Length: 229
Image (cartoon, rainbow, N blue to C red; front, side, top):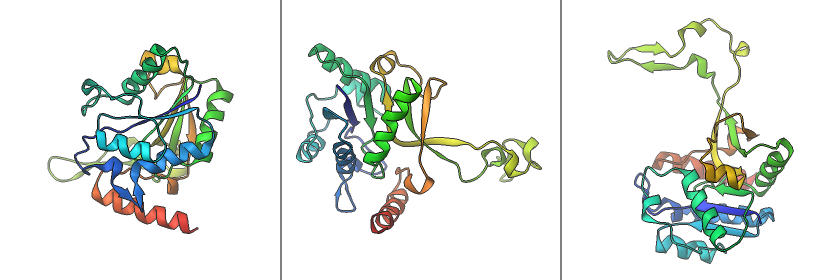
């Protein structure tokens, strides 16, 4: 069966209770749950959490919370793959075969049912181990600058100072929305960023990382504009 797994631990520090804080009128996690439901792809939509309140909100919006995430997988250093692998192993002990598995971030209000469907199609068409959302950088990363200890500037790649932008390869970054993967790839701890992964390219206006209050405010304005369009 196809599984949607939404990790949502309770220990967010920069934006307290971020996973269930109201975003444009709904708890943030509700947008991810509803996108998974609207996609029609999943036999189960599961939230992995260590938090009672998050679990209650998830259930209220139709997700399942069949287990409590162990404390060892709920700290600041635990990666996504370990959390997904834990859920897969839970179902294996129940003699349920889940494959593939789509990890959807709880703080991804811009995720859409259509892009989740594109992700699965990409996984199947490319025979990759993973297929996940990416978007392009707005500026050539080869011409990025950094600040020195002396308070001046320095290029990361000074050899490209005179290279025309159109002559530089386009760069992409993780869009932080969803990650389709084969169950065995998740459980093996295989790297997401590798030649065994395929991209699902999203337009930049549908991507916003939400780590600070300023990010949150910007995301709400962007979301409202998209909803009105």
